[in-house]
Length: 556
Image 1 (spheres, rainbow, N blue to C red):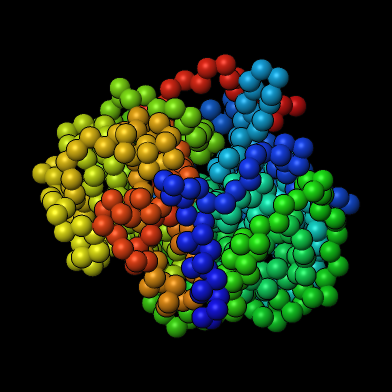
Image 2 (cartoon, rainbow, N blue to C red):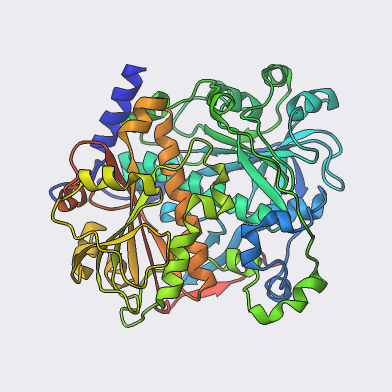
C-alpha cells in the first residue's frame, strides 16, 4: 500500500502546472494520430435505440429540472426500450453538431476535457421489454445511439448478479481510455479522464432522476471484478479501457444498501463468450509511463467499507406521483424542463464581462452543492471531501473578492488553520442562514483568476470562478491510493451540477482543468498536502459564438 501511495503522490506532483513550467505534455498536436472519439465493437449485434427530435424535446414540459432533486416524487418508469433509450439519450448521446467553415464536430450531453471523451459506457441488465430478450452486457455507441450486444448470459446468472438489489435494478459501468486525452494533454490526462468520470456519473444520475430512478455507486467492487463484468480482463496497450466504476440504477422509492454484486456472479462471467472487437483509435500511440503507473497504483481491490460504516436509512416513500396533468397545474412556477436543461448544456467559450448575476441565484447554486441538499451526491459512497474557493467577480450585492464556501461546516477551524491567518472570514450580511460562506479578501481579482486558470479570460469575465479544494492527505491515508480518482470524480460531479444550474438560470458554465496548482496554494497560504486544488469551473453569461453553426444531434 505504501508503494502505491508513493506512486500516486509522485504522479500528483509531476502533473502539476506551475508558472515556470507546465506538466509534461506533447510538444505539438500530432493530428494524423488523433484518436477516434468513438469506440465501436465490430461484429456485434446493434440494438438501435429510440431518438427524439429537437422539436419533441422542446415540446416536453415534464418533468421539470427542479424535480430531478426529488426523484422519489415521480412515478418510476417501466424498464423497457423507450425508457432505456431516454436514459442514454439524456446522459451520453450526441447533443448537437457544430460547424465552422469546412469543419464539423459533435458535442455530447456529458462534457469532456477538450471534447475528447475518454469515458465509455456499458449496461448490464436482465430482460428489457422491446430491447433485450435475455440478460445481456452491451456497450453504448453514441454516434448511432445504439447498444452493441457484447454478451448474453443465463437468467440464473442474472439472479445472482441482481440479488440483494431492488426489483427493477440494472447496472451501468464506466471505463476510461486514457490515450484519448493524453494525445492532447500528456501526463495531466489521468486527472482529466477522472473529472470526466465524475461528469458522467452526474449526467447518468440526472437523466435517471427524470425517469423516477436513482443511482448508487457500487464502491466496494474491485477493478478486476468490474473488468470481468464488462469483458475487458487482460487487455493491454495504450488503447485499453481502464475500468472505473459500476452504478446500480433502480426505482427512486427503493433503498439500495449494497456496495457490490455477488462474487459468485462475477465468477460466472469468466465463462461467458464475448462478441466484438474494438476498433483501433489511432494508427500509433504515445505511451505516458506516468499515467500507466498512476492507473496501476489506483486500481482498487475488493473492500467492505460500506458494510462496515453505512448507517442504514429507511427508504424514501413517495407520498404522491406527479403526472403530466399535475404538472400543468404547476405551470405558473415557470420551472425549466429537465430534458431541455440537460441536453442544452454547452461549455461557454467566452464570457460577457458586463453581465451580473442575482445574489439569490448565486446562493441557490451554493445551496445545491451541499451533499445533504442534493440526491446526486448519494453517489459519493465514501463521503464528500471538496470545498469551494470562489473568485466572486460579478454578483449583485456581493463585494468582489475571494470567498470560501465550506461544504462540511465542521471543517471550518481546520481549514482556517491551514490557510493565511490574515484572511477576514467575514460572513456577508445577506448570506442565507446555514451557509458556511465567508469573504476572505475584498478585491477585484479578475486578472488573477484568469492567470491562475492558465490565462483563460473566461475566468476573469465570468460572474464567478470556482477552485475546488479537496481534502487530500487524510482520505489517501485512510482509504489508500485507489481513493485518488474518486477525489476527481467528486469534482466532476460538482462540475456537472454547476453546468446544469447555470443552464437552468439562463447562464453557461465551463470546466477548466488547466490551472496553476502550486501558485494558487501559495496565494492562500496552503502548505503540504492537507488540501489540494483539483478542478476549476466558471459560471457567467456567454458571448455568442461567431461563425459557428449549430446542427441537430441526429439528422435522419
